[in-house]
Length: 259
Image (tube, rainbow, N blue to C red; front, top):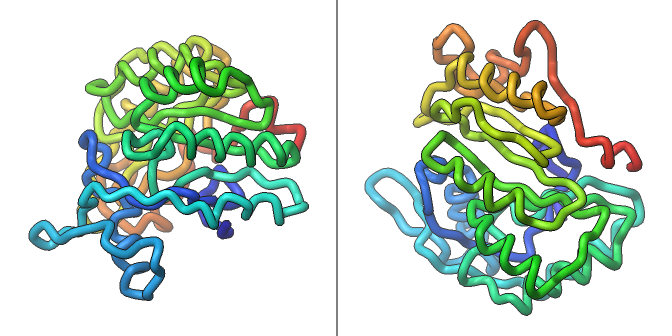
């Protein structure tokens, strides 16, 4: 467990390490470079998870289940919003069903925390939650990442998942998603990409999601402009800030108010 600067959560928990690239939203994933740094710091969990591709660090497909990390949330007595697997994807095909069920057991045993799980593999999440888990925990939020319209089908898979809260991270938003259907989606996070290789974000792409949130009563959270501001000029992430339509949007799904 680690405290985090991610604006929409309080802490991260990584019972799985390692991943693989599945779509264009993965291209500049911060976790790939972070895994390389952690390996350089001799953290065993992150050894051998990445390779070099030109000047970039990329996942090599090795995924590691960390049984020793499973009990970490049990030690936290104060309520937290916990982002599960910020350095991986719980529903990666190399994570076993049995291990995912162990993660669920920890979340079931700690109802004072709210767990936020994001995946780029919502079809597996939907199938496994329905068949192997078959319960809705009120403190578990299930979500998927959508970077552009090419992967809008992930939303349809997410909609079929039994969950107290379903959410979408439109980050990095690197293209239009159109008039996206947010029916039965409780929360949307929107953000631009940051870093040296960041791809631009356009205000009209954010507008589409904002309007869909308003139509479907979906909470809207604007995380950042990232490296590219609303005027399409490159600056630091901090300089571009988080203001959209003249305010900071920090809306959260209603169930989170219980924390």
